[in-house]
Image (cartoon, rainbow, N blue to C red; front, side, top):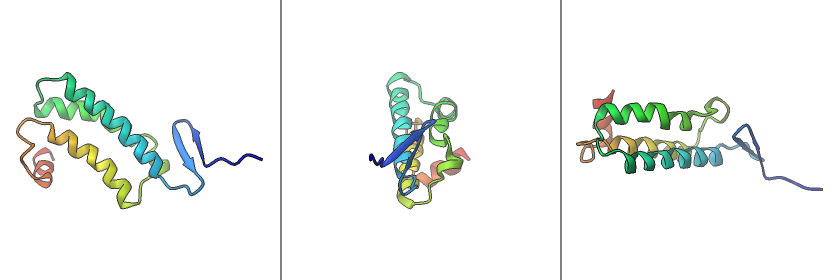
Length: 107
């Protein structure tokens, strides 16, 4: 008899405990890869460009199947929020501002 620790169905990772930690790590990894590609590819990193790229390329990776694996542990939420912090920090002139200030400026 073979036991399985986790199952993958339609891109959603489900484990024995049904905790979303592996799914959060996978989503954050995919989003960070796209964020790195953006950082290497684009010279101009103005507010409108980074926001548009974030909304169209990164956010879908973070929100994929979120209704099924809604993160509820603080560590999982922090992993996903770190991607957002990195994206916002890439905007020209935003790297020296506090995170809360950056969010207020961007709405």
